[in-house]
Length: 82
Image 1 (spheres, rainbow, N blue to C red):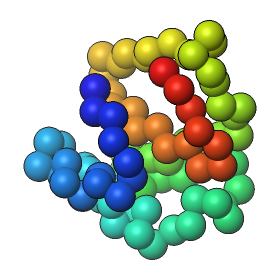
Image 2: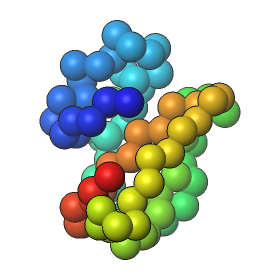
Image 3: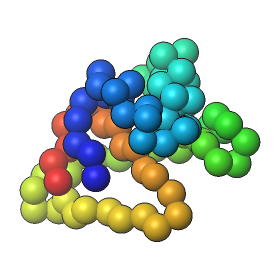
Image 4: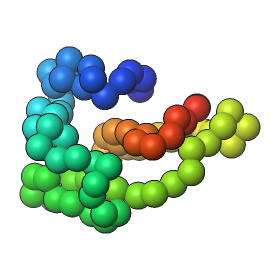
């Protein structure tokens, strides 16, 4: 797990070949103005799943794990704690 700010995402492109595509997508799109939904970025391997959710405090936050994918979570309008 990597915990950082979105400003540093570009520093992690060497970790996965698709991270550069994520950086390009985020630079070309304003997540704050996009409607919730699923946005394909690269074939079936890379997509944005934009949802509206309430931020969680320490009491409700749990760590997620994935076996078959990498999940980049970006809180846009509120802070989230884990």
